[in-house]
Amino acid sequence: MEVRSILKYARISSQKARQVTRAITGMPVSQALSVLDFTPKKASLLVGKVLRSAVANAENNHELDADDLIVASAVATPGPTLKRIMPRARGSAAPILKRMTHITVILGAKPEEAAKPAKRINKSKAKVSAE
Image 1: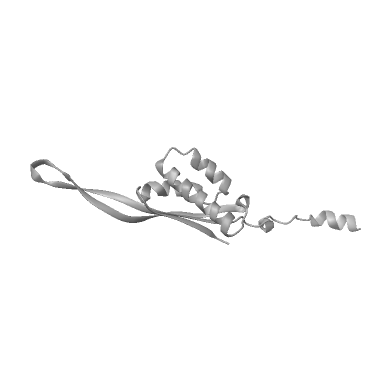
Image 2 (image 1 turned 90 degrees about the vertical axis):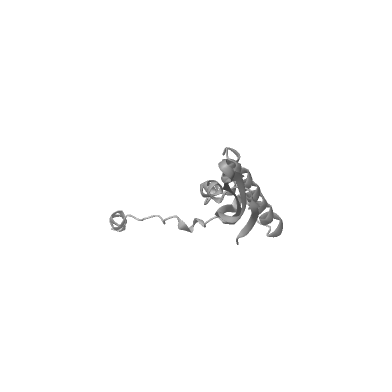
């Protein structure tokens, strides 16, 4: 089961937010929260809010345990841009782009333990013991 949470129109550029979202993708929720708490970036506060919201959605709406979840996907996509101007010399103007982003966090279940390789049996020892 996937649980998602979205923050729309965050006042940060998607490039800056993407640095933080890439860092936590694939981590268990507890580890991702501790990484975000010690990351000195504005985007870490915003992504942390979205991650905590996704965990709350999982616990309250889907009755899942936060310890069994990983960050399946964390994405920062560009939103609308506010276009402003800055007065420059001799009556001209320079554009200022105030960018916004949409931050989406998707939580999923931890992969099963079936991915571990089975114990290998040494065939040479098995033949010797059978004789």
